[in-house]
Length: 228
Image (cartoon, rainbow, N blue to C red; front, side, top):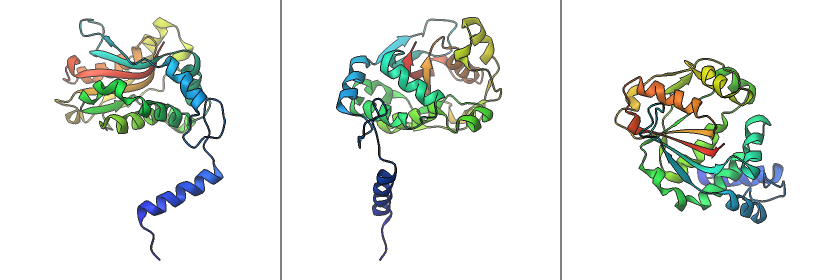
């Protein structure tokens, strides 16, 4: 008897749930939705979608910065575990929470494409995934905006920004990115996604390579999970 694709996927998911049961990544308790009610309330207390306007600031290569949280408490520990402790499944908890609160950021539907801040090939091999891409995929589905790949590339394996001071962070990312296939971004409202905004240098450098290739600053905005 043939099993259609959808039913096969359901069966595979059920088997995987038995072998690798989902847990709330915040408290570790078993939970089919990756987020228990108690921890969901903790995230709700921290969640506040905000937008900073940089349209008149000459040193910024993007128009707006959107973010969901301040970089502290629960969301800080979730991002750190996702980024540095090989807990890639943490993104499911974050995306599930954002899905339930999607009405708060309807404004993001105004963009035409999403571009993810890339990591170097060496870092990708070491970590096994790009944490910003995992989050971006979830957000892409929530707001129905397509991720456009192969536009921004990282060509230098820079030092982790978290290990550097403000001045070093700026120097660290200079000339670390290039843009290709720029036609895919022409005449589009672009949303560049990363995990954390601290000094903004990484996102500013990514936006710069687009501006240098003829994209207007007014067509570029950035989104992060949190702002430090």
